[in-house]
Length: 290
Ligand code: URA
Image (cartoon, rainbow, N blue to C red):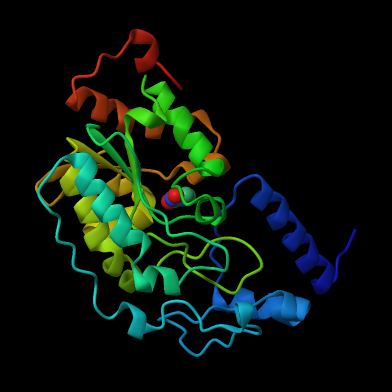
């Protein structure tokens, strides 16, 4: 069977839609590929202006509004002054500030919510993702979509539950984009803007370990050498401030790479976390995904 370019591009689009239903959150396309797809599919493919390609012209702006993150909103990161008090009272003060944050709200999609961290304020582990996705921005809660369900399973495999750990994101809103589906990785500017909110959550929870989920969260937290790949960064102890960070793959990586090898890599990173926290680890747990 031979396909012309339009049929081929349509087939790719349909396959991507199918994968989206299964949890695919983002894809990266070279400009050349994007141009070819646009030639084949016209207005169904749109580009996002990025720092590398600032003149990319979106075919339609969503909701007729300005594109997310135009710098004036984000020029000054917020100042957080945590008051004295219990973890609960400090968290509710912080949550109130974040939910009312003008820049966060200005960058929301229509009907979406600003997303603040959830979980046990006394947790020894702080799982840190990148940014809310479509499900999270509607729920106003991190990691509730397909990647979140998988994260819940990972946490359960550690003998814990979602309620017993703390889960937050580098970003408090879902980065807006012009594509029909998927997520756009946050820019450095967006991540640096939200950083005081993340730091304040870490200051309150005082976790013994932060688990950085994926490359974007890792970049936001620690700006590692861009030449290093996730394979080089994961499974080793890093630091955020004075605190230890374990870098591992994002759960959405496991949604697309279902091999035991991928699961085992993540699991080995988390075994290191469990060992550091002196959690009990059964023989069965040690042997998972071998
Ligand atoms: N991916 C993230 O990094 N964070 C979420 O909250 C959801 C998906």
